[in-house]
Length: 252
Image 1: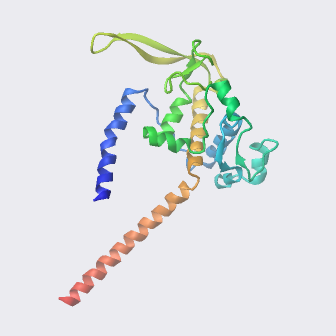
Image 2: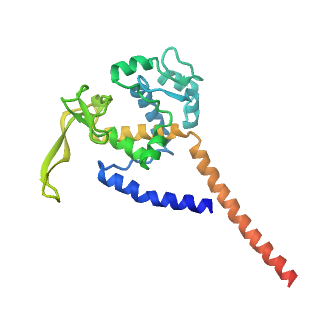
Image 3: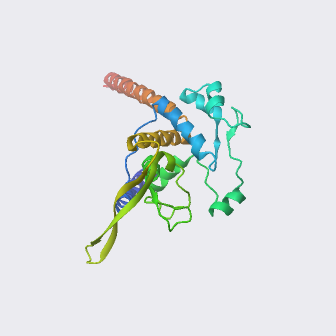
């Protein structure tokens, strides 16, 4: 009975998630990267070079990247800072007190950010993927940047050199109630970055894939085990069905 109530509660929340997605900024679907080791390795490199300066991943150890095909030597050569160790946690030297003073709030730990956003909005990877591609120049903001997914965001656009600078183009139109609505129309590239749009989108997808993997490094193994468990249960169900039929045949 309790299980049925939980299932009904989850189903009741589905329209809420759909409504939230429709009312907010339209999220783009994040490409699947969980089984692409090369993409996950590239995502790990982007994370260390661009995110780990301010954001920690204190629940993650560098050597856990063995699971995505990296050796200790590769981790040391490409992902470690001078004082870090392969078996150490992915922490940052930035003190929370200083971060709060400089940015207004301490940057959150990103160990489980993909799962956190999934629980909040129902679509963690899509949210992060769209967020990292939706920064635009805004001189009214302290950092000079704003974001369509996270309006008035405090974090500056750390990937601006890769993506370039874009501005958000808005249009004024009348809504259903007859009042004028200031609506986002499209992004316009003002200054090209080091990467083309396709290359930047691919890089962000790799980073999001890594964040999703880091949130639960064992999920690929869990999925594989799940398939074998279902096959075993299916076989067991057939055996139980035949055993049951044989038993009742003798009783009759």
